Image 1 (cartoon, rainbow, N blue to C red):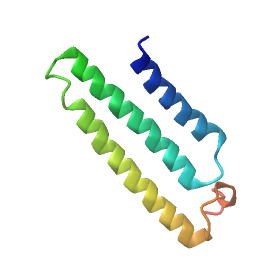
Image 2 (cartoon, one colour; image 1 turned 30 degrees about the horizontal axis):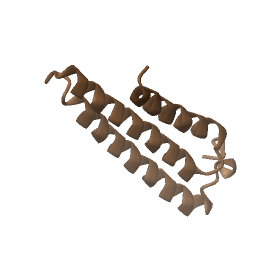
Image 3 (spheres, rainbow, N blue to C red; image 1 turned 180 degrees about the horizontal axis):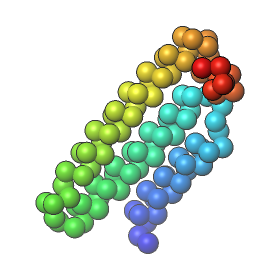
Length: 98
């Protein structure tokens, strides 16, 4: 494994562990998801550059478009949660009350 691959895989794993263990606020969960998507985007971009193939050149842009949609949906949920519950703490959310 090259150092570049190790860096991006460790960035993805750090985002995943942050998402798994630090689930106190919705904003921190969204930031961890964005870090994971950013590391996937850079890794996929480098992979398409290493292959020198035009078949996979649209894949990083498609991933970036889905990442932007995921971020906008997450921020909309964050604003809606903050307005209805007054906080973005995940402990105050109860799925049985919705």
